[in-house]
Image 1 (tube, one colour):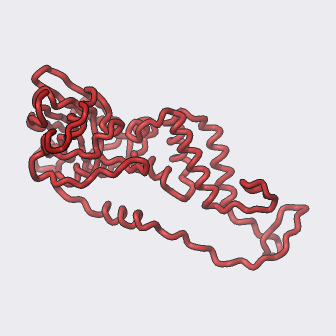
Image 2 (cartoon, rainbow, N blue to C red; image 1 turned 90 degrees about the horizontal axis):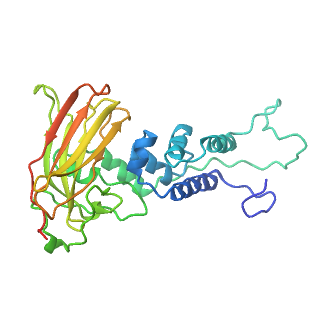
Image 3 (cartoon, rainbow, N blue to C red; image 1 turned 180 degrees about the horizontal axis):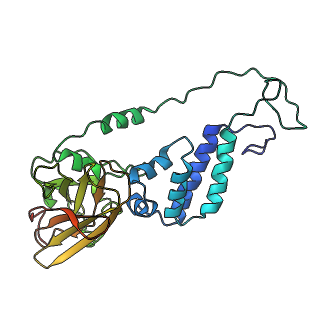
Length: 311
C-alpha cells in the first residue's frame, strides 16, 4: 500500500492511523469554533469525559461515540461513518486461505515473513493515575472541587485547593477582570483558580431515601465570579433535566443553565454559568426535573455568600 510519505509498500501502523483519525476529529472541532466539551455533551448525549477520551485515546473510538462527536461539531456524519468503517476494516486480521494460511488478495505475491507476537500497547502512567483516582469518591467538598475540571490536554489543570478554609480575597489571589454575567466558566478558564465556597446536599423529599447529589457554589478570584456545580449520585435518572441557576439578590441578576441528563445513571458533574461577585452576595440553586417535566424530583439552594471585594 502507499503510506503517508508516498512510498509504495510502506505500511502504516494501526496506532499511527488512529492518531491521524483523532487528529482529524480535533481539526473538525477547531473548524466548528472549538466548542467546549460541556456544550458538545449536551448535543452528543455523551459525558464530556467520554468526548475527551476520543481526543486522548490511541484506539479507534466506537462508531456511536465518533458520530456523536461529529454531530456535536456539525460535521458530515455519513462521511465519517464511511471513514470509520474503512478504519475498522483495516484493523481486522486477514481471512485464512483454504489451506489454513493467511490469505492474500488475488494477483499479489508476498514473500513469507515470520510473524512476531502482537505487541501490547503500554498504558501511560497518567492513565493509571487517573483510573486510581476515579475509584475513590470523597464525600464533601473535595468531589465538587475536582468534578468540574474538564479533562483537556490543551489547558492547565485546575490546582488542588483546600476548600475547608475561607475563599481567598481578590487582593490575596491577584484579581483579574470580571467575566460577563452568564459566561461559561470553562471557556473563561475560571476553573484554573476555582475554590468551593459552599456545599449543600440535594435531598430526596423523602428523608429516608439517599440524596441526589451535592450542590456547590464555586468561586474564581481571578474571574471575580461564581457559578453552580452539581455532582450527582446514581439516583438521577436518564432523561431528567438538571436546572442550575446563580442569583445575585442585590440587583436581581440571575444566570440559568438547563442540562438534559441523557447519560446512563452514574456519578456525573454539571456546572452552570457565572455571575459576577463584585456587586454583592451570590447563591446557587439546582432543580432536578423528571423526564416528563411534570414534577421536580429534588431541589437545593446554598446560602448567599459574599465573595471577593466590591468595586
